[in-house]
Image (cartoon, rainbow, N blue to C red):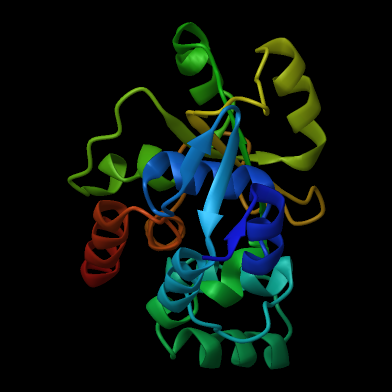
Length: 219
């Protein structure tokens, strides 16, 4: 039975080693703990790959945010050509564009002490599981947080709130957005419905994906 370590599995999946450890912790990927290390059956890896088929080349962050803004009926400063392209892409349906929208942000997992979660929530634009209830989705999140933060602010947040990016069971997903894109207003505290829906559809958790599909159906 061919077996792999976390680093080898991450390379085959095209994700970070941290993401593989999270998939193991969540039960999305089956593995066996040997001491402090994980061993993973290659057949299990193939099963996961089969659940996440290729969806084509990712767009640029600016292109991804333009489509999401149009989906939520927001005004977008685009040339006529770029606006037409964005509308044509949106016409395919957001549920078919999830993979191509992934470049809108960098995803980083952390552990935050429960005592600082509320403070952290005030510093980010709540999205994904943390923005679902704001848009009427029935999703219980527990002591966790998901939100967007500008790239220029992430290091300060990590230092001030002692966020741990080496924890085995993280409870915070921060989606880091390039400073030159900055899709949210300074007073905005919740991402739009379409953004939250796409966040949820990216999840490995079936309940989150179902909630994302329901939000799209309400658009």
